[in-house]
Amino acid sequence: MYAIIATGGKQYKVSEGDEIRVEKLGAEEGAEVVFDQVLLVSTDDGIKAGADTQNASVTASVVKNGKARKVIVYKYKRKTGYHKKNGHRQQFTQVKIEKINA
Image (cartoon, rainbow, N blue to C red):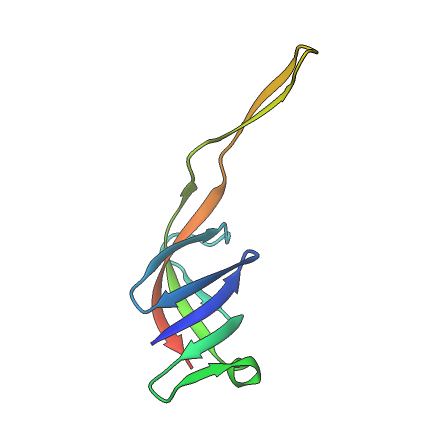
């Protein structure tokens, strides 16, 4: 049994017991999070999508909040002496999928 959920502008394929990193949710560690935006659910009966998944949800618990590795952003223009170096660390929330409610 798996589901496809949407959060933070991205889509994730999840099963019960999976741990995934999503965009920062603003929830404390150990808190329970419910993802209501379910795009597809695969059950023993078959696949449900569209209007069939309106009341479906995925329950997860927050494992940790953190920052990803640094991404270096380097801008450069030749012959002018222009170069600019910047860095960015994206914040994330790691969640463990507890239950898929179809």
